[in-house]
Structures are given as C-alpha cells and as structure tokens.
Amino acid sequence: MEKRKAVVTRKTKETQIEVTLCLDGTGKCNAQTGVGFFDHMLEGFARHGLFDLDVVCRGDLHVDCHHTIEDTGIVLGAAIKEALGEKEGIRRYGSMLLPMDEALVLCAVDLSGRPYLCFQETYTAQRIGDMDTEMVREFFQAVSYRAEMNLHLKQISGINNHHIAEASFKAFARALDEASGFEPRIAGVWSTKGSL
Image 1 (spheres, rainbow, N blue to C red):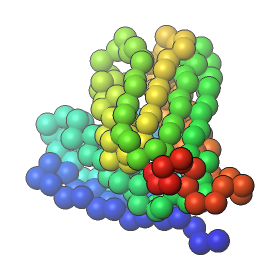
Image 2 (cartoon, rainbow, N blue to C red):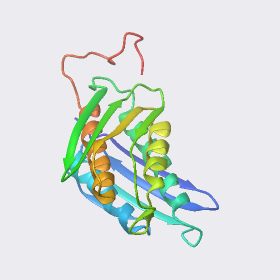
Image 3 (cartoon, rainbow, N blue to C red):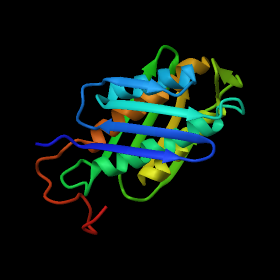
Image 4 (cartoon, one colour):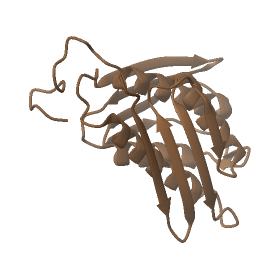
C-alpha cells in the first residue's frame, strides 16, 4: 500500500513554514522552528506516533514564539488532513492515557471532520525553556481546527510543567496513530452518514 504523505507550505508576513508528514513512517523527525522546546515536543510527537515529520519554520521570534507555534499547528493540521485523504478504512477514533513520571495525560481523538478542542491542563510556569506554556493550548487548537478533528486533552495529574507538556504531545501522537490506523473490517468510512 502507498504511504500516506503530505507536503504543506504557508507563507505570511509573520511566518514561512513547510511541513512534510508521512503517517506511515518510522518516527524520524527534523524540526527546525527556532524554538528549542517546541522542536523537542515535535520530535516526541513524531517518534511516539511513528510519523516521519519535517518542519522548517522561519518566524518572527523577535516578537515572541506565538506566531511560530500557532502557525506550525495550522500547517501540521493541514498536513494531517491531506495525508488522511478520504479516510477510507481508518479506525477514526484513538485514545491514550500516557504517564510521564508524576504527570498523567489523557488524549482522545475523533477524525470526524468536525473541529473541536477540549483542553484541561494547568501550567504553573509562564515558560518552559523558550516556549510560553500558553502556547501548548494554542498549538493543539490550531492542529484540531485545521485537521478537522475532535481533540480532547486532559491532565489527570502532574506538577512538572515539562512533563505535562511532553506527556500531552506524546499522548496525542499515540492517539492519532491509533485513529489513523486501518481497520480491515471497515469498507469505506466509519460513519453512519457515509462520510467524514
């Protein structure tokens, strides 16, 4: 079977981004956004979802990290949507309860074609490395809306901001890998409406 891939570019006055995504990869990642902690999160996402991911972003980091991270989420979401194609034969739903030391994060995904984010996490620091913690939510908001997926992220426990964020990206990776995987008993798309 041909691997599901997408290449998406986006250029604005604030950012220039190119994302190459293969859903049927091995976890290879090349992330160059200029925001070190965010690159680390993207690497964890690719590795634990077994996605091959290349992200190159030139953003207005002299302002702050907001446009770089949000716009990367927009482009990654578009790449996910494009790589999924017509979604024939996929499981559609995926979930993961992922521990990272004291942190425990639940992620659930529905590749429904309807965008929605439910985000229940608490950060006690303003920044992790060079990334504003409020950008964790903004990233997932952008991904969920551009990919047209239901995405739920819920922090069950955790006090270390790094661990909570990293558990979130890894849980999302595992849930998306499950949802985008194939169910051989399904003909067409898994919906009573006949489309996703």
